[in-house]
Image 1: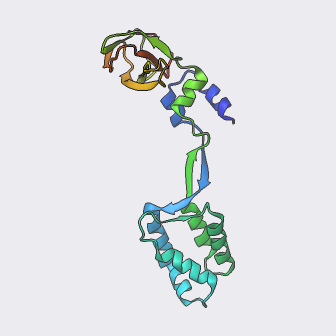
Image 2: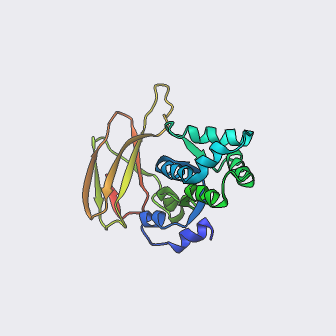
Image 3: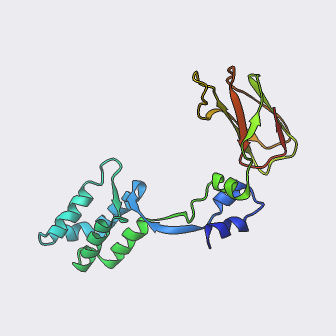
Amino acid sequence: MTKQAYLESQRGKPYSEIVANQPKVNVVGAIFGENLRNVVAILAGGLQYRLDNAPDSELRTALLTGFRYMTLPDYAFNLAATDVHDLLQKAVNAQLVTPDEYALFLQLATYEKPQFEITREDCADYFGGMDWQPLATSNSVVNIWLKTKAPESTHIVIQHQDVLPDGSLSDWRHSTAVHGIELVGEYQAAIPTKAGRSYRWRCEYALDVVVS
């Protein structure tokens, strides 16, 4: 399934649900954090004894060095790195690491991640959230009137643009964001005002809303 096909199959659902339920895939990464405790268990199960009593070799030294520094902060065995994975595979061929231990290392380094890494912004782009809308105000408060319930809790972003001393325009900059917009009713937000300043707003959903 492609990213577009998945999004199309989810049409009409809240963005948070689409993001949470997107397809997952298994990837090999690093063994770190709490999973290092399982590496200790593998060592205690016979691997450490085997390494301690094996003849000296470059491969044995590399493995002992790697395991010795497991207590360092943020340490990890990154099996996604070709040289680290190849080192472990060579250790199996040299009978320093058993096939079962190798399988355990791979299992500890395997993680589930979203296949497409879809975000709410991706959903808004695909399904058509609101484009930027002009907001005329000289007030320090923006009033938001939501006339129809939103698909889920969402937010409205407000930006401003200034006229610079030479008459040119500044880039659009963040003014404020109003979160928790879902139930029918009125919402308010304070914004920084300045003479000549222009405002605009948008939402990830195409809402039945009046912003003034």
